[in-house]
Length: 355
Image (cartoon, rainbow, N blue to C red; front, side, top):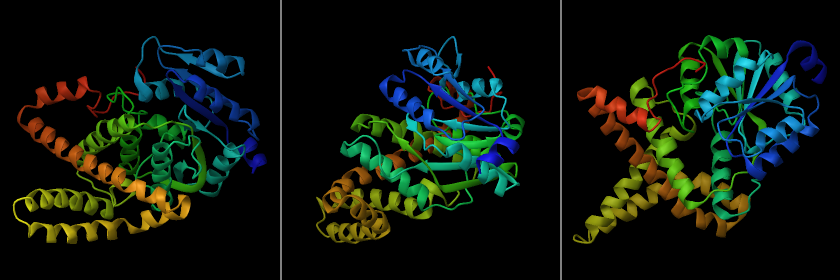
C-alpha cells in the first residue's frame, strides 16, 4: 500500500486551527508516526495564533496564516491553494490519526478509480473520559458505522478528496463564516454533480474534544440542526442517511408528540395513555443504539444517555422548526432573511474557493 501511495498518489493534509491549545499539540504528535508520511502537512492558523502555528513550524509543517478569523471553510480553502498533492486530506484540529492513515487513503482511491471522495469516522475510544464527551463521540461513531457506505455527504473531520474535483466545485462554501455544516453542504454539491463519496467505516480517527452541556446544546441546535435544515429546505432533498435517516425523523416526531401528550395529560389524565404508547414507540425506534451503548459502556451509561439523547431529538426538531420559519420569511422578505443568516454565518449561498 505504501509503495502504491508513493508512486501513484500524493497526499496534502490540510488542518485549520483556531486556538488549538494542548489538544492541537497532541494532534500534531500523532503525525510523527505516520508511515508513509504525506507529501505535506499544511496548517492554516485562522486569525489569532496561540502558539499552534509556531509549534507546527517547529515540527516541519507548512504554516499558512489568515489576517483575520475567516472560519474553517475559508481556512480549508486557503490551505488548498498551497497544496501540491493530487489528494487533499482534510482533518480537524482536534483529531489524532493512526500511523497508516495516508496509506489507507491512497489504497482506497487506488481500489476505487471512479471515487471522488472518502470520509471516515471517530473511533469508539474517545480521548476525554467525561460522560458527555464519551456519549457524544460514541454517538457520532455509531451513526457513521451504521450508515450506508455510499455516502450522501462529506465530512471534513476526516475526509479526503481528489484535488481536481475539489477545485472544480469551488471548495467549501465561504458564506458559512463559523464552524457549521460547510462540509455537509459541499457533499450535497458533490452528489448533485454526480460524484461518488464513500464512507469507509474502518478509516477512523480519535476525537480529543471535551464536550460540555452548553457546547453540546449550542452545536446541536445552532451549528447543526438549524443550518442543516435550511440546507434541506433549500435543496429539496431529504436523504435517508446519517443523522437524518427515517428512524431519526420518526424519533423527532415521537419526541414532540410525547411532550405534547404529557402537557395535555395534566388536564386530561387519559392523555397519559397516549404518552405510554409514544414512549414505547420512542424506545422501540432507538432500541438498537441503546443496546449498543449498553454493550460498549454498560447499563448505567446507557441509562444516563436517555435524557441527553431526548434533548438531541428535541433540539433537532426545534432547529427544523426555526429553519422552516426562516425559509418562509425568506420567501416573503428575502433581503431581511439573507441579512440575518449572513450575520450569523448561516447564509449557505455558494461562494468562491478563495477569499
